[in-house]
Image (tube, rainbow, N blue to C red; front, side, top):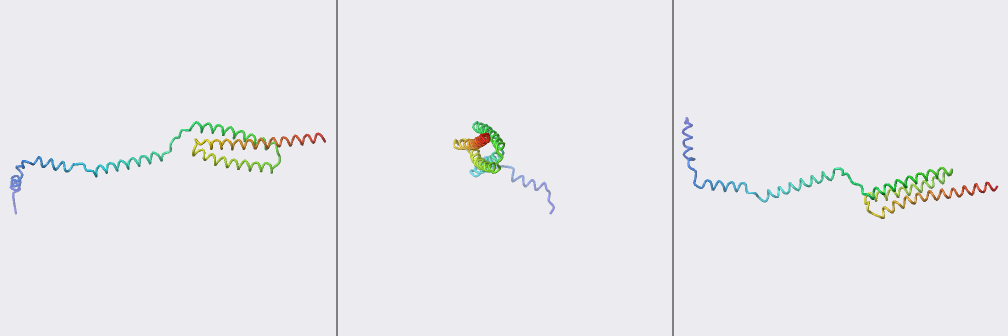
Length: 170
């Protein structure tokens, strides 16, 4: 079975020496068929684009955003700080005017209830800072607390004045 390899190549050369005349045309048709863009590939590209866009949006919205504070929110915080400062001062004055622990406990309970209501209203305000009714409710709550403290102080002052007046009469 010995054969000369050169002889084998000579035989192959005979078969491939001449190309058919329409070889170029057939080759171009095959190339065009092979690389013809199909609808499925465009759908894949569109699907990949949507997936990438969705993933990007998910990452973007999951990152903490630096929120700009609305001007009304800043004003409300300023008003709140002022009222809370006045309430604290009035509370300290109230405690210094009376020695009645029951009275202090009763008013502290009332103030705690108002504070709880204020926290609820405040959480509503953070959800919707443009709601005027919520803003009014916040301010009314602070006013009520301050008025409550001032009224009780005035009442204590009147009582102390009457006691002093009665003692001086006796």
